Amino acid sequence: MNSVSLFNVRWLYLILSLTVGICYVNSLNNGYSYNDDVVLSNPAGKNFNLISFPPKTGNIFNSFENPIPLITFFLENKICGFNPLVSHSINILLYVISVLLSFYLLSKYIFKNDYWIPFLAALLFGLHPVHTEVVNSLHNRGELLSVLFSLITMIYLLAYFEDKKIINAVIGIAAFLLSVLCSPLSVIAVIAMFFYYLLFYRNQYRLKPFLFISVLIAAGCLYLIYIYHASENNIYFVENPVVSAHSFAKFLIIGMVAIKYFQQLLLPINLSFYYGYNTLPVNKFIALLSLVFHSALIGAFFYYLNRNKTISFFIIFYLLSLIFYISLFIPYPGIISERAIYLASLPFASLFLQFLFAISGNAESFFQRKIFLYPVILLIFFYSIRTVTRNSNWKDTMSLMSHDINHLENSALANYLIADQFVKMYNTDGSEETKLMAKQYLKNSLDVLPDYSKSLNLMGYLYSTADNDTSKGLEYLQKAYRVSPDDPAIINNLALVYRKTSDTAKASSMYKKSMEVKPEDPWAYFYEAQLLFDSGKREEALRQNAQLLHKFPDLELAYLNYGTFYYHLGKGDSSLFYFELAVKHGARNSQLLNHLYNEFDKTGDQVKASYYEQLLKREGVNSN
Image (cartoon, rainbow, N blue to C red; front, side, top):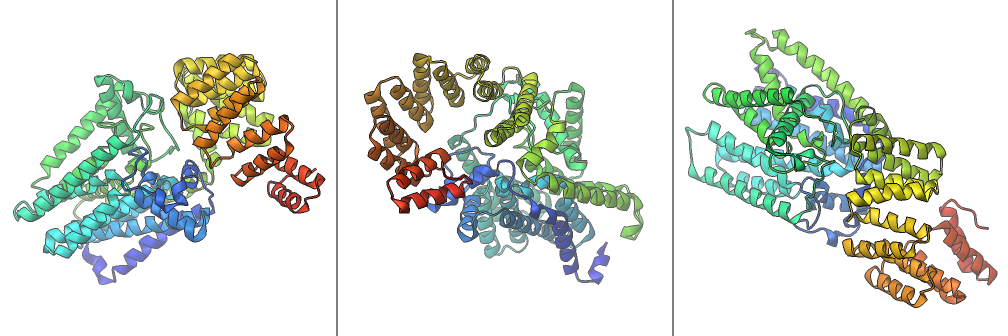
């Protein structure tokens, strides 16, 4: 296996770089896709002062909300603005570097200069189709950075174990800090190194390295616990049924998840932008089979302790890589995801290759082991083709969802998400076909989970707004409200329907409840002020709007209301003053811009008339 040393090993790094880069080059044509909007709209992308250490909000599994990913988004936006070509180029670069680091880690420290298995493991890792999610998604850059810094951490910790040089320990600590600031779950890599030390240095035990890595693990776990308790970790049944499952049912779900991850790592056929209820229905036989299989893995860990420590290490590394993603301790949103097994795919590939090598006979030449070579070649070919084709699915949000929904018919949330995309399209193009598609996917969602409040709410919105069928819309919205009485979106939609049906009292009560449930939401204040004004309670309307302005001075909503109120009160100058402030604070409603253009054109103020005419043209609307 050392035949590779006959030529320069740098060629292997070049081959890895080119192969992985070529497989991902078509993703450079993609735009932004699913969930990328939450990154693009994050104010921290424009204001460095909004990046907190540690993060104050979010979910423990949302790595994009952590400080290091946010810093990269801020720098990217500051230097060249958000551009999908630039974003994808950065992701691909980070990914290729991680693949090269994985080869360096395996060849130098794990397999000790036996290059072929490390090279093939790194190649399978780099070409694996499950990684298309982290590479193609701006939203998942935190995962890329987390694994990259985790690999650096592992490399320098292993170097420290070997030569005891303090500089390696310092670099390892720095890389570890960076990794947990990308994702607190990066502590997995250090725990894996703890087991490596126990396995490979038990005959050379030294107290300092043992204490050093123990302190790192303790610090990482404490930070993980702190972030978990400081973050928003509300997971709902539709995201993961484990939250409401009794102990045995939870056990079965965990078994299903674990074996599903194994299947995805071995043969990733149907990859999905989201899973959730009910894409992984519990099959007791499969769940118990999963228990037997993973128990056998644990048994193999102990069996190989004195026979092949490398196999034992990769078994524990693989199991550790999954431990936070199978809902054993914390419910994982979506039940499963491809990004969850990004790191796990490295020990998996290493184990798989070692298994094939072990059963492939005793031929001296590495390439004469056909039982080893042929499956690996087939997998490399399959992974490459699958990765290239999967990249094209990530072209944009709709192309991704439209492709995946064909095998996500049992996911209530996936059907809702694509319906929501069609609703957004309908709000733009007003197409009857688009509206019908939205209704069909909402129907599919409700067929899976009849009491799913988000789908009920969106269906009610469509009927009451798009179809002007307030009776049917109200029926859906009231059902949604019974299921989720504290959901601000449902409350606000109900208020709008009550307002359309002239039920002012109920509309007002809904707005007041919305303010109580979510006081940081400006829309309830906005619409309540309008409702009061339209009901003839003008003084109350102005007081309510003053409260809106006080709470949200940087939004255009209060200024829009003042402009409208003063227009109806016949105070034209005051109306124009506030409408202009609304535009200054971001309002780009074509009707508003056209009104301002016409008013200033009438009074002969051609400077302002020209300004609003230009804004109209930017919005793609002609002035009249």
